[in-house]
Image 1 (cartoon, rainbow, N blue to C red):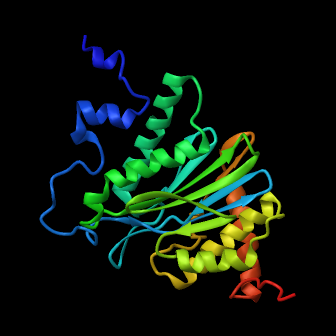
Image 2 (cartoon, rainbow, N blue to C red):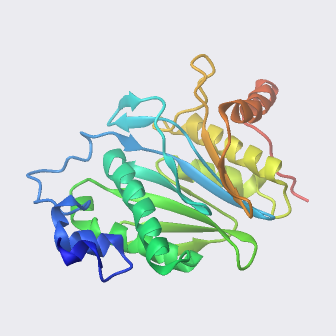
Length: 271
């Protein structure tokens, strides 16, 4: 038996695969003849917000190919270990592959070392994987994730954003990525409160996604007739949990009921 599989020599699963079968990794492809950016489905808006005791991440469900809606119920938020998750925006296929590989990367480290990476270590590992995809990003296969984790050392939720060259960049309180991020961030800027409860933080995230869908055609709003709701995940000291469709529907109904009388949504007091 090949000793390579008995002792990989590295805590990084990505480095192990890169030395044995580099063609299996994202971004290790020959150059494309032309940009394919508009020809493949793209994931759009993701938001994350910290609250006392954890962090919330939420994403809409729409994927687009140019001006065409290619999928109405795409999954964009992925659990990566018991205390972290990743949301993807950009080239959907590459983003999903990256999220799945990152999950294995964290599991590989934990099995070899008998402990989890620190939050900073997790964020840095993800940045290195994004940087490896840079050649493909230059040809339209751009994927930019948002990473959120619960820090057991400090008892707080933490959020990291990235660019196509890697990162990470730690964000304070909240962050958004994707085509609707400008509008979602504007909503969070007026609605976010550091002292807010989990329920109020989830509501603020749902409001921000609604505002993004209101102004960005690539971001999908809640689909009441098909019962397609945003994906919402919560990470606390108890670990990662994805809210059920029934729970998310309850939050969405609150937002929709208020929007019936106030289409532009809640406003923040000036004083």
